[in-house]
Image (tube, rainbow, N blue to C red; front, side):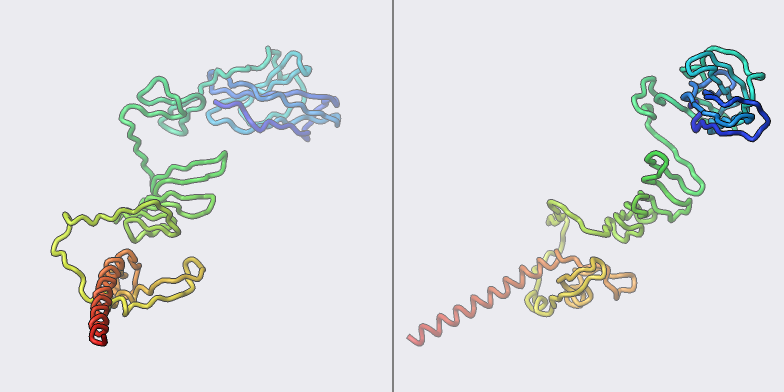
Length: 323
């Protein structure tokens, strides 16, 4: 159980006859059996006479009562009063009990398991399946955690009192994605589609096995192109004619807001449909696989080279006739 925090004092508009002086207070909380370490000593300088002092503090989870200690001097003997409130109006010492200094070590339970109400564990590390946990929560036996939520189940990661990240589902719907949400940017950093297992980075609505909304930097990409997984292999025909029908364009991208160069997917689809992926309507293009154009370009260059070699031979024959 933690030490009471937020201990403060103020002039209380209650009947009292406290002389103007310095007053020292500390507060401790009880779980019904032991007591927490007392709060840091608070000094309150009462400058007005014939008033009381209200000492207040933040509630402590699980506390059944509190003690307010008053030091008779800055380093002298103490008196205390018990209360179940989170404040006490001090007007005199008549209800106080002379005591030793307040506790410097906690004897209150730091955990509570309850069938009803709140349960907690405060202080130290918690081990499940191990008696020697080295982190706040260490699970050694099985290592399985079930999270049930309605709606959804989520794990939040905080920086002090501010959430930084959230991992989990936002609702309990069957179509709900599994998301990693970035609170700093207010966007979904990563999303796994529940129905398709599609993964989205920078998008919460992935439409491919890996859908990245942004730039990607990689060292190498290896395409699975082994003949062991191909049948009916044929050399492309008419590749040069297909390349001649394509149109290289420059344009302003509404995605990057930059001037770009490339091809129009729908135009490529009319010539090389294998390189274009379409929406469900079969008309609007989702994307263009530029890598598939390599095979067409290779065969187009070979066709063009054959034409060049043929023309070279004809030129050589004409040159011999002229001689």
